[in-house]
Length: 261
Length: 256
Image (cartoon, rainbow over all chains, first blue to last red):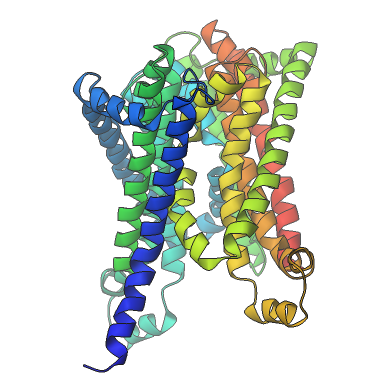
């Protein structure tokens, strides 16, 4: 072992754990300040919940208000919507790549739709499908399939010409080139689209659940608000932020794993 | 649009597709509306939607609601930009602080902003103030994240030159950081504007007494479906126009 190794390990530990520990400490400090502000009456408890009360409410939400079941309902909807978005987006992305005329005609439109406030279409689906899971999942599919298609098309366009030339040198058929070269090379970038699709689907589903007071996590926040259960409402919001953080972390890790350095 | 470098035949085919697609969609819509497959009134005919659209644009009431939404958008977006830029620079100028803040900002950025509506309503009530606050909250994260990333990527040589010249903090900000941050700030503003629009309209839909979102959901509740469709069309045209202007500005700064 060289002298430099322990020093490098320390630096690595600082880089890995330093910001995380500092982040947790900042969060604890802010929580403590809020607790004191509420306890001293400076912050109105009818507007802001004390963190201790919020954490206790979280337990109550799980035991009495079925927060666990609500999470599973939202998760099931988000996963179904993402799966359907992949079933639509992946072939659509390939089609836009494969047929130049279609790609040239519709890629710009898809990009414009990606930037459009599609979630505002939900009243339209409420009218057509009704106030049920069909509407929430449909909105998830619509918002999720666009990034999947765009990033799949982009990923196939970005496949290195050198790899394609190697395939040609080995006399691969078009099908072999697609399955052995294009698909594996496109996976990392296409996964970015799937990651975005899942996040968009999840965000939109929770948002619509809140708006129509139906389904999983979004409904819990709405119910707590209309019940004027302030600690419960903050606890539900806190739980949704935790879920977002968890999703983001896991998906980024998978994306990093798929992307060779 | 990426139509450059196309041969004339391909260009003609692309143009034909782009013209024919909306026509086919309109015909499909009309066929579904007249098919009787769906409950009556759920999908109105194109003529009914066009008539409702005309009634809306000729009514002074629309402009009142339109004005409320625009005012909320202006307020929310201005606050989001000011706080987002200041926060982004403050966090980005210290790499350790930015690495502490990044996971929190990123996870809050991907959280649906509409769930914060109860919090802002408890503080500001159900009037336009709560929509302004929600819009500001929505727009803040993309602007702060983009500014923070831009600040982290300011060329170190420029920062070193500033330090060598003993510039004050204010001079560093005005002479070194801000000129390098115009691009990231504008890109963040473009993303933030989209989120602000969505947050404000969803806030109006959930609980409000004025604004385009309120009008759309009011028509839904009273089953004036053609009018609801026409308001949605107005909302989309407005959002797409604002986004197009912002994209144009963003592209100009990217080229500069």
